[in-house]
Image (cartoon, rainbow, N blue to C red):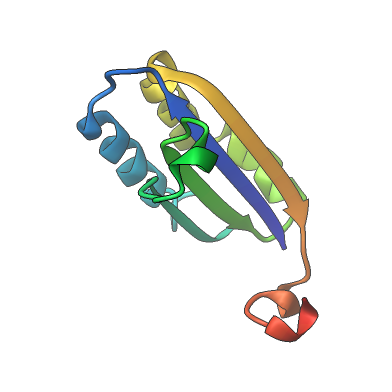
Length: 110
């Protein structure tokens, strides 16, 4: 399994509608982009604002493997998302890492 995590920092004044549309588009990936096992996306509502660093939208996509993540990057739905939100984004953090599926939900692994 392969995890892909993205944090987006939107420019000041970007509407809630733009952010919610991005979340909706991400949820539309499931069942339409090969290799996607699970995903979640949402607008940041943390009360720990001192740690948010201005990042307002989080996306997590779990893939079957790293190759599926690579293919996803070029998929038309992903490219459409990038084009639609690109002008509103001023910062992005991406983290990708492999993990064994048996670890998911197993608290005994640390």
